[in-house]
Amino acid sequence: MHELTLRAPQALVERVSDALIDELSALSVSVEDADAGTDEERALFGEPGMPDPAAGWQRSTLRALFDTPAAAEAAAAHLPAQAWASDLHVQRLEHLPEQDWVRITQSQFAPVEITADFWIVPSWHEPPAGARHVMRLDPGLAFGTGTHPTTRMCLRWLARQAEVVAGQRVLDYGCGSGILAIGASLMGAGTIDAVDIDPAAVQATRDNAQHNGVVLGVGLPDLAQGLYTLVLANILASPLKLLAPLLCGHVAPGGQLLLAGILARQADELTPAYAPWLDLRVADEEEGWVLMHARRPPGAAGD
Image (cartoon, rainbow, N blue to C red; front, side, top):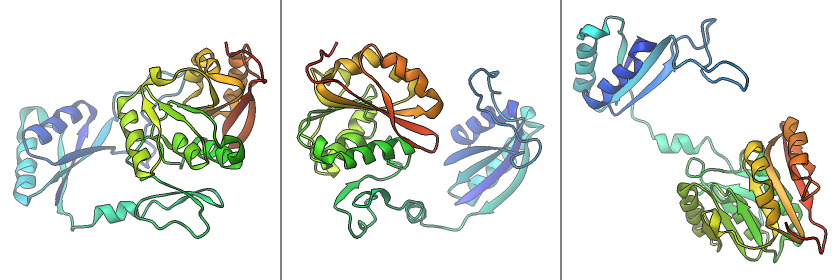
C-alpha cells in the first residue's frame, strides 16, 4: 500500500478528493485538520444555539491510498500541475508496510460487562468465566454494541429485573441493532417486537437475532400493535418527547416503560411530556446520562 499526503486550503478539498478517486485511482481519501493540536485548530461541529459550523477547515491534510507506487507517483505529479491547484502542496509519498488490519481492529474491542453474569462478547472472544448470559455482537457491524452508557443502563435494568421480564410481551421501539430486544430475550421475555424507522436497522436486528439464536418480531414501526407489558425506547430526548402519546399508548395496565438516550439535564423536560399518561422518574444515571422508568397502574387505561 502507498500513501500520498497533500495539504490543501478548504476551497480545494472537494475538488482534489474527487480527482483522486474519480481520475487517479485512489483506493480511499481521508481528510483531517492540518492545524490539529495547534492554536489554529477549529472544531467543525456546532452546538445548539451557536452559529452554524464552517464547511471545512482552513487548511486540510488529505491522505490518499494507492495499491501501486506508480499510481501514487502519477497522482503526486499530476495534481500540482493543474492550473487550479497552485495552492495544493505534496507533503510526502511513502510505502506503508502490510498489516493485519482486521486483527488490529479486533484487538481494540473487549467483552462488555453488563452485570457479573451478563456480558456482550465479540465473536472473536471467548466469554468470561462466570458469564451465564452472553450476547454476541460485533462492534462496527450494528447500530448499538453495549459500550454506550444508555445501552448499558437499559441492559442492566433488564438483568436486574429478569424475574419481572420473564414471560412478558416486550416492545423495543427504535431497535437499532436489536440489542435491547435480544437482551430481553436472554432474560426470558416472551413475545418480543423490535421496530425501527430505518430498514438497515431492521436488517441488522434480524441478523443479530439470528446470530444469538433468539426469535423476535422485527419490522418497521407499524409492526407494533396493541399493548405490551414492557416498552423500551433508547433514542434521544427530542424524539422521545414527540413519541410520548404513542409509547404510552402501547403500555398495558400494570406494564412498564423504560426510556434512555436522555442527558441528565433533559430529565425535567421528559417528565411533563409523559405526565398526562405516566409518572416518569429517573431510575439510573451513568456518565451524565439517565434511565427513566414509569409503571402504569393495574387496571388503568392505555390512552
